[in-house]
Image (cartoon, rainbow over all chains, first blue to last red; front, side, top):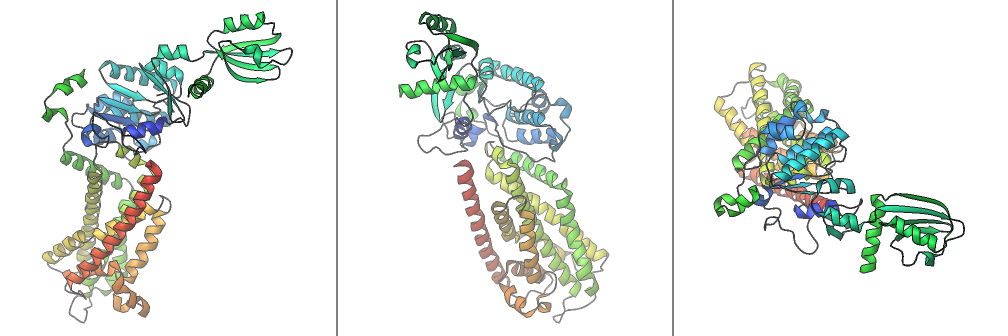
Length: 264
Length: 270
């Protein structure tokens, strides 16, 4: 689940887990209400903004969470998969932010759940931790687990997901495979400075979404920057300066959102 | 693939859940261990009643009340009631407020742990510390203070106090859900200390200033004290009256706690 900050990712996870009540419609997990203990026994959860008591050790709290589940993983295995083997005897209060994030991952997987819900799992992880996390998630997926996770990094979604749901302001604006999504999201950003103020008509019919045109400066998003530039030159637009860069996600979202509004 | 296997399994094995007993055991042990590692709680809970008894009780151990009860035994009963009440009010009040502050509750809510088991584990934890504090106080009073009572009397007192502690658990929850983690310790002190003073847990009610003496019979700790005093034959009201007052206060405190809990639920998880 991919979306900018404030898109409704955490809220969606909360609804799926029965932590929040929907104002309309209903959420079901395995056909059961998400608050049902039978459903929860098959879920592992990693939430943003949750905490644990700080005086227990890593091993102790993993053992506690294992007791909640019918057929948990061995504690050593869950701790090792989260990359915390060296900190197993450390108190939670002494862990760094990244280690704490790994602890929450260990707590999510220790019950050997069929479905994992991970809300922004890589926030606060360093490069090393993130790499270990990615390989653990891939191993779990290969073992047949379903993993639902949220992120605001397109790269992360592409790397890990088989299906990406893009949401913005509480609405689904795309639901596709990473390949399909890549085609739908404009990948390049063209920044132009023209000699004379650019008329909007000069851009008519081009495969671009306009981010901003003010006076002689224009920012455009497109998947075919070469074709766009060729057409602009053919139309006699006098380009003084030009830059083509990879579009960042915020900009790509903006393009997707605007299309959603146009379609609606 | 494990998912497929489970879908085809017979209904009985399709939805395995962990046994509640195992959850309760693990949760209780974890609560007790957590509290043990917070000396601000564990040391205070055990040391304060002994200290108070030393200052307010030891000087009077040899004296006898008009009805023949040994004053030492009466004061042990008073501080025993103070001690159990404080474990409940401070344990639940500060404990619940701290967990809310750390957002422990957010993650716990998403696990298969039923909320009732979580609460039950907290009660077991609190009863364990209350028992510990009672045992230390009574052993101290017997050995250092030379207070003599039959073992059956002490046991009777312990059982009455533990069983009757419910209104203070409710008061703890009320404080824990209405106060933030920084306010809760002060709130618990401000509520519980004057309450136990005015209820005659430090000095017998007859020694208190007139207006306090007038208020005392309306306070929960006064009626809770009756449970302990009755064990040493010094209760000043019949047990059914004391129990009725305690039940009434339980209902009031639970209502406050529940309202605060609901308000937070709708704010946090609306």
